[in-house]
Image (cartoon, one colour):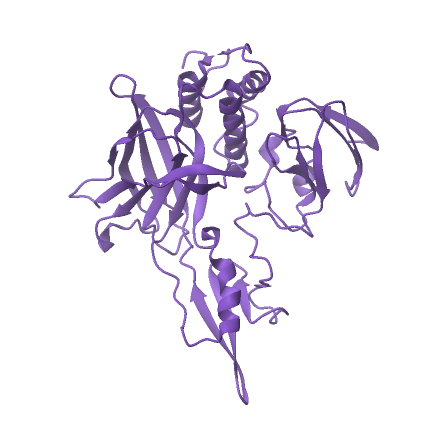
Length: 395
């Protein structure tokens, strides 16, 4: 981008060199984002400009047109114009506003204490620099402060491999293989998949059977507000949760466990999978009340668990084309950011184009000429065929 340049984007998703985007692009905090916008009435979705690797692109996901103009160099926003029909909800700097979606920030009012650095102001409760411990500074009369470290048991590295196929008439079988990366320090002791609140029963919720590490699955019957953190919003939904039948069933660092599954009439879409060690974070009950008031800021599970975007049962046949296409646009973007998909792939770029059209018109092109090449591309091609009737080139 040279000098000042006007950029106008149509609805849905526009990505400039998305392969250069870092993980957790949405709400990554610090100075990676220069500016963040919330645009359009139907959904609040974060997008912005990145400094990393010289990226000069704009992430856009919206329902109506917005015209944005930026200044090169420091890339500070020059101005924001409203085009006819556009709805601009806000402009702010992430340096002053933390995102609830970030897995790498800290609760409001809780300082981060980086390893090897002096104790920061704002205690007596801190979050460790690696985000895996709560650090508490306890005053003792006439003595130096006592430093207590409480593990959050969130040092896990989940990786999920999904597959789907027709089982019986009108039913789809979703299966999952879960790995815990070798770099992890904690075990995976439970995980959950978010599904819609619609009163549609799930069938045959299964886990890995004996004699391997046996797990069981259960569906919550209660409708709650769930955090679709990987997609950038909250909604009414339910949890499908799996857990080991005994302590030896946990997935240790470097291990993989296959055999998780669910059968449902719901059509596939992107959703959030949450992973945790299953261990409780424990505190000394004799600590002062002021410390526990600070510790309440860690009640949100995002400080104890890790989330990923996954594919699972999400839609009924009555759900709108626009809703489904928007879901796939958000999920495809997340998988580009995480490295599961390559933005330069012809299949991925043509899929984004087709989804853009479908998000604007029910009569958009439902044919993709490029054929899927990787396992994840084939999974998305199959999912889009079932949910949207989109057909891709032969595998």
